[in-house]
Length: 134
Image (tube, rainbow, N blue to C red; front, side, top):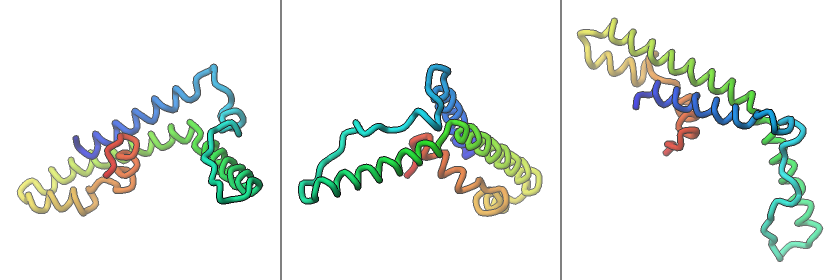
């Protein structure tokens, strides 16, 4: 699988996930989809109950803010970015073929460490989404 393939696969997966997350029967993302206090919690008996409740409530609030920030619209924007990174890589492959047709070492360097290299950050995101991160 080429870097462009990895990026496009992740973009397609993100779009699919975002589409399913915003199905018409689901509540408004920013107001209705948060974890409730019914979520199981592991109790550490070494702390006072009030400390546990406050700690859990603070963690729950932080998780809910994170979930709200990961709105499906963000998935669509990330998918567009991954597709753009794939197009840039494809353009780099074409440029390397055009410029370094008689220089295999130059061709390889351009695509691995030069301006034709795929975005390392986009690939890291794609690999997380694709489940292939190291």
